[in-house]
Image (cartoon, rainbow, N blue to C red; front, side):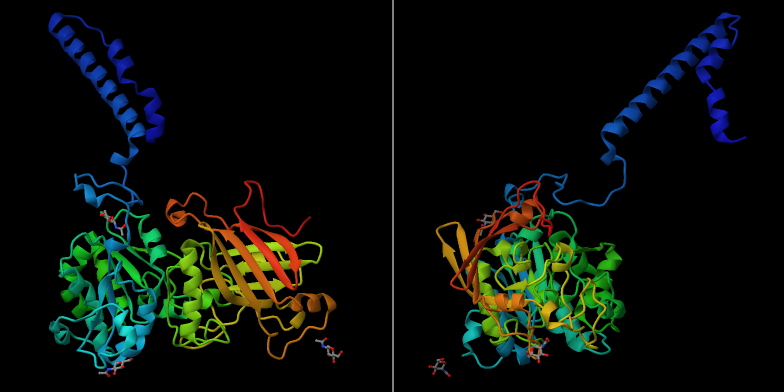
Length: 493
Ligand SMILES: *[C@@H]1O[C@H](CO)[C@@H](O)[C@H](O)[C@H]1NC(C)=O
Ligand SMILES: *[C@@H]1O[C@H](CO)[C@@H](O)[C@H](O)[C@H]1NC(C)=O
Ligand SMILES: *[C@@H]1O[C@H](CO)[C@@H](O)[C@H](O)[C@H]1NC(C)=O
């Protein structure tokens, strides 16, 4: 007999009522029994009510952002996370630091940022001008040479930066952010991302590689070190305790980041992925970027300059100028359609504008053209995002404009100017409507600055909209603005 069939017919209260009560001792017993059953009923009802209204107390769940810790903590541990709560640990070496310090000098701000680049020995050339505006260096604690390794000895040293940083015991550190000496951070956006999470909990935050090949070869569960990753204080505390033994267990891995992942796996904390950590800049090299704040860029030495007519350092400086104006907006994509001319325009703010003399829906404008290759095998994919094959018909390729100038307008606005590039090499479209697009010299984009807490508050995780404001002297004017509540980006009239 199944339990479900048994239950409806079994009613203890009914049963009890039907029992005859012949004499006193039994009567007392029966009264006690009734009281007992009543008591059971009341307690089970209250248990049901309790679990309905306070489900969290009894159910298993993963920690969610913004949970408060149960035990009382000093006041200063609860304010919003800002840059002073991050301790950066940068993996460097004496051999590369003189050259690579130019990348750190771009984002390091000695008045605000805290941290060190960790080196194997004292670097030469003290007179390097970049080093002056880059993070100060420290020498890794010498024990690192004692550990087992297979391919890369320095990976052990770099994995131990989390211990070296933790043991400095600096005050008010909520997050340890690890990265390479050629990682470029956009620190305002990094703070916005970390501020969403409760630093009293254990968090391991970062991104995968954009190359599936890399994720398969290493692991999808790991934060790739080049894009940088963040470890909250409580997780760092546990990790540092087990790290040394753990490094010997995973001596056969290639990188420091994979060792860190393997050790964190033993603690049992999963990776929380954030889209803004970029192991490689390829996602947006064609101007298609996710609706997420840009946190980091990496491998800049190994890819073409972001701006084709500039070297990489000057390219980054240009990008940085726009970033400084309106940090949350950097690289955010916006789409406009000129329905009379049948044009589609995609703006990646602070970097590039692409004009297609075709009406293309948002779904196509947000999918990058395959203008890049995978890391390592340099093949055409696969990537962890979708791409569109490069068009063979030159008339389907966009006319490209690149950032030329970025300036503040009043207190709260910005004006960015994008200059047209020459046509794609060897690809020229003869169509007259294409010629009209090619006759434009510049695109001038105005926008109100985004709320600095745009990505923390997260109340509107949505692309913004834009209006075309006509063409004057071969300059096209565009205004970016918040979309109206019911507005969508469509090619229909
Ligand atoms: C960061 O927050 C702390 C409080 O936790 C505060 O004392 C400090 O002034 C803030 N720093 C900045 C740069 O805002
Ligand atoms: C350091 O660099 C400055 C200018 O870059 C130069 O004038 C100076 O002579 C250099 N000093 C040494 C010791 O090389
Ligand atoms: C463009 O025009 C030239 C001459 O008018 C012609 O030779 C060429 O094939 C055309 N190219 C395309 C892509 O249509």
